[in-house]
Image 1 (cartoon, helix red, strand yellow):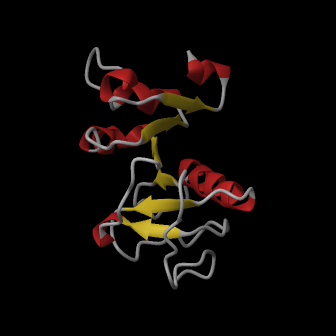
Image 2: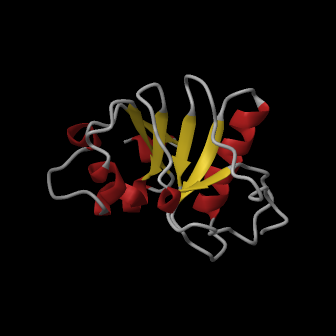
Length: 142
């Protein structure tokens, strides 16, 4: 268990409008992973039900300090049509795998290079059913 964020009893967000930020199981320090954790921490502080979603059960970053609820896909959490799934641009395959999901899907583009390199030639996020792309700069928005 990481002392940096509570994983002792994973808390499944409840109620309508839950927000799940998917995050690669990437153990090295990463600005992108840190940003995802910070978003979830801020959403929870603002009263939203939000959690980070990793792939492997028990995966935990040991280097970041944002206190966030964490869930794991290996535990087969249930996502409902009222939920929003947020994917970093490097997880385009996961966006494709969730094409049948009835809720809202959003991409967060943390860097312009991976945004395009993970898509097939001619493919756009809209083609994958993504409703919105969050960006941090005007350059990435282009």
